Length: 267
Image 1 (tube, one colour):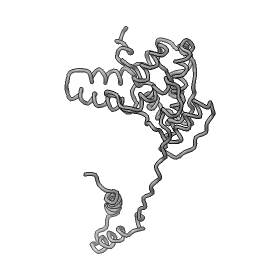
Image 2 (cartoon, helix red, strand yellow):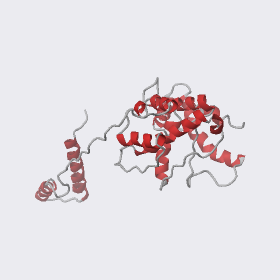
Image 3 (cartoon, one colour):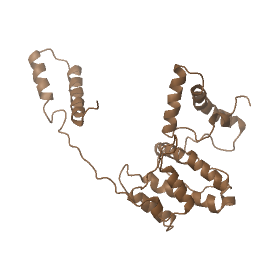
Image 4 (tube, one colour):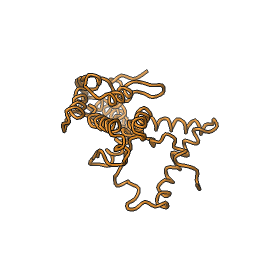
């Protein structure tokens, strides 16, 4: 049974009190009792807690009411419902500021500045318009979309933020529903890359540099995936659970068949 907020607060207080008593040892029983009573008083080592709630963000218009083009609406609708073993990864209707961002960007061709609270879904305010514009190009300019080019740049002030958003990008653009629709529209999926101080190496690509960089990919992702697909054992179950959890969090390379893409060693 889950503990209540009050019980959690009490546990935190008791843990701190026990730590202080264990760290600063005294022998006198009366002094121990007096200190115990003192530490239990409000304001000595902890204050009376207050719980602050925030209003729920208002939902906006459904995707079908925004006036989106059929191909864009099809992609958004596909991602907003559970399909087989694929969970919904966006919500319909979205929050009001998300639907406004989609409408202003994709329909009114406006530039946007979005300022809203933590956890309010600011990422969707630019990722969904990017997805929509890529879908529009793939549907209306098939030949142009086949040409590799930079079509959107997402900039962050710290690598930690980039690495966090990388999972969101993998989940969105690596989702089979998105990949299959882009392939049906233009013959290829939408791709993205990360450029930070952790980018493998500068300069011209070479086979030797690629092998050095890709060896870590094989030693971790491919090895765990092969183990997860192997005979049932304790190691197999642990590897399978790890792979599923990484895929769920978007921390897995967005390749339809990672083992086939990586290839056999020595080839």
